[in-house]
Length: 218
Image (tube, rainbow, N blue to C red):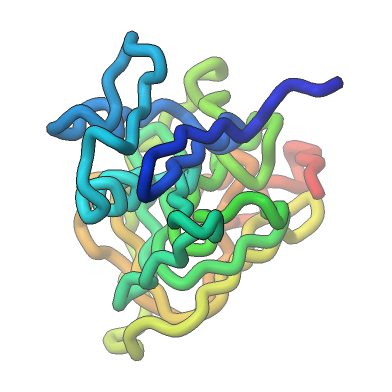
């Protein structure tokens, strides 16, 4: 039998699920005020110690989609998509995508990656297209500076599709804004090819460096 990948923490009104495949331990849950998540406690998550609004708020802070919420009927709650789609190019880390997402490569039981996901951009993740913290192991460095500005104006929201180009970049299509590592809204547009091999000299955009590097990925 394989390792359990999704853990459930049941409460009287709601159940919180944690997907170990997606978690990169950012800490938004453990550092949130209140007793929903307490590191070192068994169980570390107890939905009976937070009201429903508090549970949904804290779960929605998770930038990787590792956390989700079920209602009393056992069905997963669908989070409202943010009004604007964004991809944050984090400092020395992944691409944090948020909005109305469709991520190529996500399995059907990854319930929250339709709203938030951490996508590998170093090329080393063993869980592509998702980040697994391998950027730390290979000492990937890129501060997330963005020089281009894209379009002067775009519509807000709508679907954002993240498609894997075999052995190449991520094709991101839809209305979205790229945030630099500093948090600055830097680029807006409707389509971009974002580096996921870690070799581009024009990060976060692809410059064809994957070909010279012999990058291989579905």
